[in-house]
Image 1 (cartoon, rainbow, N blue to C red):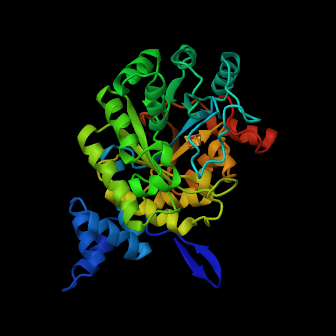
Image 2 (image 1 turned 180 degrees about the horizontal axis):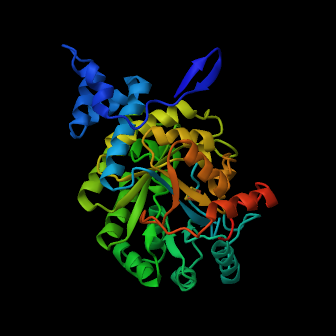
Length: 414
Ligand code: SF4
């Protein structure tokens, strides 16, 4: 929990896996419960909170109690799934196959226009080499995201997906705005694009590009990406085809607190309809070297508060990932007490958020240590959150690698 302490920020964890009834019983027993106590009682009864209650929580809830409530929701879900002791993570490589883009999002530090210096698209040999490195480091998944490149044909994407599939890697690829771009430039319907990509080896879709699912906000920060439906529609079509996805939120820029809850409401409604989301991940806007650099970045307190409300609001989502890439390992660890049950990816390569200013990196050894120090057992997983069998002696091998190589290598073959 973050509290001002003599001008500094002191960290102390809220109560852990205690029975929620014990935490809240004294409050609930009072003759006139406060608004927080009233909402908490409903959550503990298993009720779904309303939009207005979500807004109230994010604006007014006392942060210790909010964290404890989110943690209780998380613990209940994990107990129901039979994995109370675990915090998972996936070894993934984020390949940004092209940085050529014509969409000009204000917050983006990554893209180049087609003829600009530094514009690139990776060829098959380069892609193969990155995939092999991923396998060598124990990776199971490739996260493919790129710019909206008007020159790359369907065949480029088919070859790329086919290559990774052949090499035994899971293709977690193309956020909804890329799929919209494909449909426009290849003159195909969204379902037809998705069927072609699925046929080529697409297994799941990352939730990137959701930003805030409110048209007013998107009109300001990414007007060429379209409104909220431009993100939701490809997700809906993908889920109908059995292609599952994650969901994201990038916040802390021009949106209001009400608009953050509107975003959660849109996600919850689509999840009710399709059940296709595996997880929710939120992170804070990064302001380095982009057209929104004048906006001050929000901090760990806002991140944790928003994460806690999201865990409570998204009652139909099983998993919440910590965003240690933007917040750092320690805040990522604390978020395990604000509703998160997963440490996300050990990213062998990440360019988009790094170029916008997030510079945090961790080795697999560090991720596992942070999970253990928070009171959980670390375990590798796949995209579907299936717990993977780990190699014998993994911890000893990781420790030996850190002793030998320092913290330069993010993962090791094991
Ligand atoms: S965020 Fe994506 S779509 Fe927007 S400018 Fe950057 S690469 Fe292009």
